[in-house]
Image 1: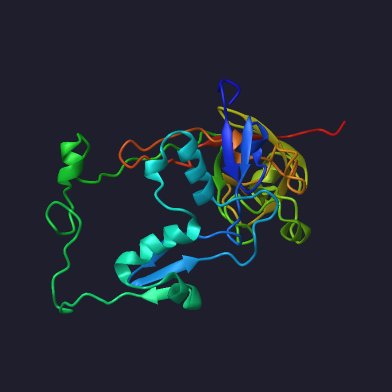
Image 2 (image 1 turned 30 degrees about the vertical axis):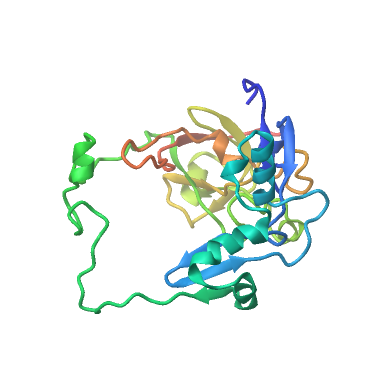
Length: 282
């Protein structure tokens, strides 16, 4: 980020990116704004504000429109405000904003058709394809084949990360109530693996990958395989604007090596291998 000439951030928190930004535009949270309508099946749902935006916060729809007009791109934002945006989305359905606000959703008429009618898949053949013409045409293997994943050598562990029930992605680690009722995140390690390394529960350890290293407390447990370690993502924030989450735990992003699947573009998050060593006090 230090190499960038200018950074602007739109967010509801002064997160790590915003901490280093030149300009921060405070966005209203989901409880303070409308969001574009969401269709699931034949139902269309609305998210609507329950309180007024706090402080100087504005909705993303308002921020983008104002930026667009100031940049001479106003024709791409042809709505007056959030409610007008929703009304334009509703216009083809024949329903009003007042109607969808009343129940939180509307039901659209279902299209006719027999239950026995064959389903048409969104593929070139219209069927479930074992051989993909699209992948073949792009120069990739048209039939999925097994590729042996890399395995950590002796002394290294798979680094696993994953979501936990207490938090929503990386957005709630600054929540004071959740912080009050949770333990500080630690690195999980199998009991037998810890014994081999001479480590005990709550020891401070150094975790090193090819791209970075962190210090974190250890959680010795039988709930994980001997060749793996696990840490909860979303911690280790450097922004002092995170008044509750600042300095709590460590960031798994510091350790992850970037492996991108050439076909899907997805990230392989289980191919980072790490070494663990104890940190002596004093």
